[in-house]
Length: 301
Ligand code: TA6
View (cartoon, helix red, strand yellow):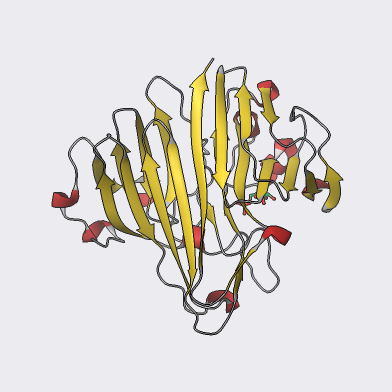
């Protein structure tokens, strides 16, 4: 199976009650996936998960009400795949790389006996885009009562090293940002993007957000927890082969500047992103591969 457009789809690939391929918002091709524990929506553009929800819980992911849904435009919310660079890059007009706006192919749907469903996506092979040596990217998404993600990048060049950054830029849905506490980053050093990338060390045991926060925590592989006292839910972000965690909330002024983000939406979201950015960027010799894995789980309290 290789599917990159709605017209490639044959109904025989549908798995009744489990996977359905359809036109989503803006007529962009989208998969709707259901397991006995959860439901999800995944757009082929960017292999972008826009929705994941456990039965009897509010949605796990935030999606802006005013997000663009248009070919070549990033979706605001859910889980954008940031690759092969994070933030801005000299000589490039777009932030956060080209993976999030390419149309990925669905290669395989793998329903397992335990009830979980995995979907394997592949980014169209990059040639020498933006000066990078050729590389491939695959994304394995596994749904059950948890959401597990694995992004594998392979250097396809015969003779050039591939240096890249990756990040699963996850937007979480929260009840009220004032009622959110983030733990797991105490003692970690970070670059504070709000203060011109000043290097700081996290001193708080519990991070609370009450103004714009845009921090790249470095050399940190640990689990992060988001406690949401409004929705009475704790979210766990576990990761492997990820040395960076980014925490972002645009707050009031930045929210107003973003054309695809509602003025009040900063109150109901927080990004806790797992990846390898800045000095934690990955270097692969020709033929080498690396996988970034993230597992998202949640529990009511
Ligand atoms: O990860 C945080 C960040 O890099 C912020 O600096 C912020 O601007 C955000 O990502 C969103 O970037 P985007 O290109 O999606 O508008």
